[in-house]
Amino acid sequence: MPARTCSHFKLFLGVMCAFASLASAASGFKSIFQTSKAATPDIQRAADLHRTGKTNVRGLCSHNDVQQDYSWMDVVIVMVAPVCTTKEVVSTLRYNFQFRRVFFIVKDERFCPYLREMAEDGYVVCLDENKVLPGVTHKSLYAESDGLIRNSQQSNRVGWYLQQYLKLGVALHIDDLSEYYLVWDADNLSSRPFDLFHGVAENGRRRASFCANPVTHKSTSYAKFYQQMMGEPLLRPSGLVSLEATIADSRVPGRLHNFVCGYMVMYRPHVKEMLSHASDVLRERYRHETRGFPWDLHALANELVPNAWFSEYDTYGSFVRTHYPDEFHVDYGLLYNRNAEAAVGGGGGGKSSKGGKGKGGADDAPAKFSCCLTHKRICALSRAPSATEQLAGKSASSSKSSSSTDGVHIVIWEEHKMRYRGTSSQCTDLMPAALESAIKEVGHGVTLASAKKQHVRT
Image (cartoon, rainbow, N blue to C red; front, side, top):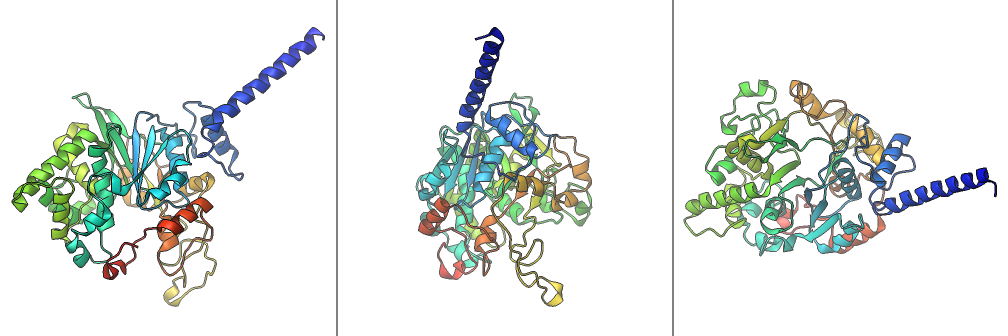
């Protein structure tokens, strides 16, 4: 064979080997990075680079973004049951932040096979909610929830409280959970990466970056609960004592923001200290030896309903703001888009399959649309106008953090409401067959308003 021909042949073999290596590297991520055929070339290219292990590739939705590396950190997601977009919650988190693992805590372990199959490398860990906190189950909480069942204004909040206890209780009972862990709501889709930390405190620990939810009213429900639980006032991100808020505060950008953003970085030692302090306060209140977390806290929940409610986000955020201010940083620039294209419980906001107008000009039926999202559609929703951006006003545009206003960071997609609440589903598509089968066996877990009367968890 001529030397030149031989050289070309060796080059050809080298190229083929290179492609074979890339294909092998991709196989481990195949199950969670399925890209729609309709995806744009940029999205496809970014996903391909990630599969091959490349670092510092551009963001999935914007070339102005660069992936964050939190490969030492775990995520905790507590939910009743998966929905179609759960796989995209996993894939976008992994793509944008490269977390070590995602812990799902679900109503029933029969959902776990479906969740674990999203990643073949152990990235997804699935736990039954009744086996995380010793002796704490939905049934055992329900047995001690007389106040919540009788006095809740809508459906009873037993499951709602259980989910919050789990987000905090993992710090006590999952031994190999990372010291800093991210609590992430199950209906949040990460459309862009952002910083979870902001430098280092004087004591050498990381300075966590907290988001600020731009409420514009002086709600006091969480503040009243916190005062009774912790024996100290609840602080908002701005440092304002929540119970002292005035009408004038509503005119100051960022003054009334709270911590209830649907995600939060928690530091396990701080969570443990906070819960221990709460037990000390509640022991004095109830004049008995503490039963520990979450039982004393649950007794308070039964007592204060419906005038005050517990918030895991406001509670932990205020605790750090008060006791570890040097480990605290607030990012006012994070932007959200909630249920764009959807009209949960009412008409408008989407492409309705019926489209008529009722009396008063309102749509006569909720919009109908595909509820299963692709990466391409998530990115499209991330560019849509954000109500949070409008409410944040100057506080968002003036932020000097890594966040910017050229797109939202979190797309909130409450598919469980779209599919299961109301008289009919707004979703025109079906869920994956394996998930649908598990839901038929276990149930979807959405608590209807009638549950208060039925005294059951549907």
